[in-house]
Amino acid sequence: MKIVIVGGTGDLSRRMLLPALYFLDADGLLGPDVEVIGLSRQSLDQAGFRDMALAAVRERAGADYDAAVAARFADRIDYIPADLSNAAGAQTLKARIGDAETIFYLSVSPSLFDGICLSLKAAGLTAAPNRIVLEKPIGRDGPSSGAINGAVANAFSEDRTYRIDHYLGKETVQNLIALRFGNALFEPLWTGRSIDHVQITVAETEGVGDRWPYYNDYGALRDMLQNHMLQLLCLVAMEPPASLDPDSVRNEKVKILRSLRPIGAGEIGQLSVRGQYRAGVAAGKATGSYVEECGQPTDTETYVALCAHIDNWRWAGVPFLMRTGKRMAEKRTQIVIQFKPVPHSIFPGAGGADVLANKLVIDLQPDEDISLLLMNKTPGLDRDGFRLSPLPLSLSLATAFGGGRRRIAYERLLMDVIHNNSTLFVRRDEVEASWAWIDGVRAAWAEAGVTCRPYDAGGWGPVAAYNMIAQLGRSWNE
Ligand code: BG6
Image 1 (cartoon, rainbow, N blue to C red):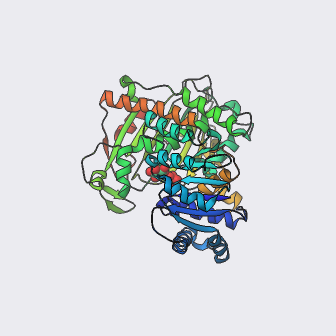
Image 2 (cartoon, rainbow, N blue to C red; image 1 turned 45 degrees about the horizontal axis):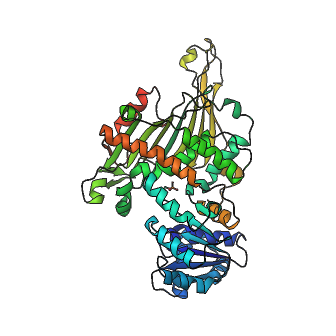
């Protein structure tokens, strides 16, 4: 089998794909016949690309770098200098790989997907079992994503098209599926009868930096919410699938995306906040503003908070509060399931303690942990009755399974492509449904004239996001 990384010398290939393949090799998960072929327009030879790949692997692997594995991995590596957006480039590739089963990983700008698919097809490289892997962003709105998906579909059938959302390759994200469907405990409670609201936070400390030419055209809504955060929302909210089979899972996810209530211009002001970081202090260092990074005035949001509703029986009346931002106070990816309070408290103010509502906190990054906040009796004697305090029941995943190396999300995803398993990949109808909802949010922003509120780099986002959630009668979990 051949794995052709189109854009093989690029950033993603060096930081993620080559190291992930190396680790699969280290774990004995790459069959002896698997060849890794870097392809790009850069004029390099095989030795040059191997050196580049091994340097990238060494940097990423750090203490986990094993010279013997690296030597074996190097033997799998080849390089083809070619431009796949023209027929001649695809013919060069065809001459090298022939009829071997091939995975094409497009780690290039989506504007090139169309041309690449056309030339792969013309060179006779798109028939089964060959498959294609696409990186985000798949378009910047519904129509552009439809055009890209249409061009790809002319060359590869949907079951051989793997759209990556690297969040789905993260261990804890998969653990959400295990938590929900491997335990009978939660299911009866997993509805608006017991759950007050859900919060999804993806906070990053990094700024946009030199990615601004891409980012400025997208903003936080398209860059993070349309894909990663809506995928997390789907995994929290979907009905139990009949099996882990790709279509069973994705059928349930798409139902959620199609049930997202559209947000109109009249309510967008109460249900969303756009923000942009200004200069501040992040991680103890003075940092510039987003506008300074861009070098031009811009109203692109680097922060977004949004309140979504899912119009179905299970989730009627339950707000899904999402927020994501760059240059925030800390890196934190977290899902909070906030349960309703007890219907009647028999501990009225005992010892000054309130009965807090239970919450299930799922930390994805930087630490992986799942904890359930429960009320307990504070030990000791108290004349006025019980004193209560909240204590977390924690799964401490790192302790349970050992500190071990944190896997790169792409390891799982690449392994699944090799084994033809698309459960953790995004189906075309999911992409379309999520864009349809996101396009609606953007249209409402435009109609209502919602502009960005400034927030200090190194903080927790605009004050307006706190006002928004307060007006909804809730508060951010901090
Ligand atoms: C990418 C976004 O998809 O995800 C980036 O384009 C973002 O802007 C990144 O920083 C976050 O990924 P992770 O795995 O670090 O949470």
